[in-house]
Image (cartoon, rainbow, N blue to C red; front, side):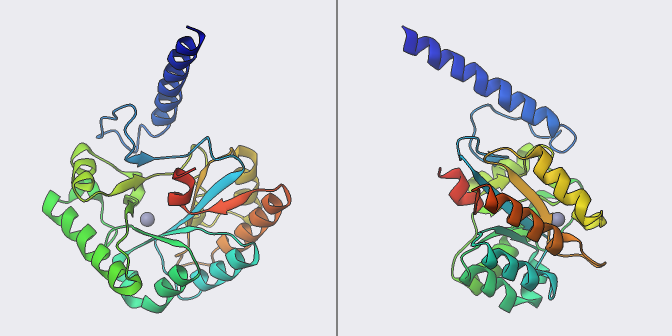
Amino acid sequence: MKKRLKTVFLFFAFILVTATTLSAYADKISDYEFEAGKSNLIVANRSAEKCIAITFDDGPHPQYTMQILDILDKYDAKATFFVIGENAEQYRDIVKEEYDRGHEIGNHTYTHPDLKKISASQFLDEIQKTRDIIEDITGEAPVLFRPPGGYLSNSIVSELEQMDGIAVLWSWRQDTRDWACPSVNCIVSSVLKNLKDGDIILFHDYNVNKSPTPEALEKILSELSDKGYKFVTVSELMSM
Ligand SMILES: [Zn+2]
């Protein structure tokens, strides 16, 4: 009987956490009707003790991505790069480098369109083209997809399901907004202050201005390594 009560309690705790987390994304996924317990939308894995998944969107970038790769190596950290197809085509060697150094490559569309404004067939085309480019470079088709701006709708999620794709967002308060070039200290303190086990942190490795990301990343990795954290890919985080 006790065990049953515990199961019921855990079930409701799960629903509560899910609802709280999703209300945090209400502006992002307002067109997506979330179904509790569904495993095709990832924001964190709270059972991954002392593990963090660091993610980078919009690359590769000819300068910043290589810098970031060297910093990750220094701390034996693995990360996930959600690449834009157009950029991957232009910097194929860098995508190969990401893959060869043990990082995960995810799909971030071909042209980074506003998903609210494109048709279902355009969406499929964006995904398919990028998937083909990544597979051509690495020999492996990506499973993970991150929607530009974090926008999801029912049709996007069901298209993804048909392709066995999984949508990955990020954890509550772990959007660094580094693309807008806040100070290094601002990024570092916000990530560290809000950090929970199993978080997914959102960075960008592409920036047209002077990026604070490499320096912030180095400080965060140094601090968290000292505290015994491990840095894993999103797929690794979800398998824990
Ligand atoms: Zn993006």
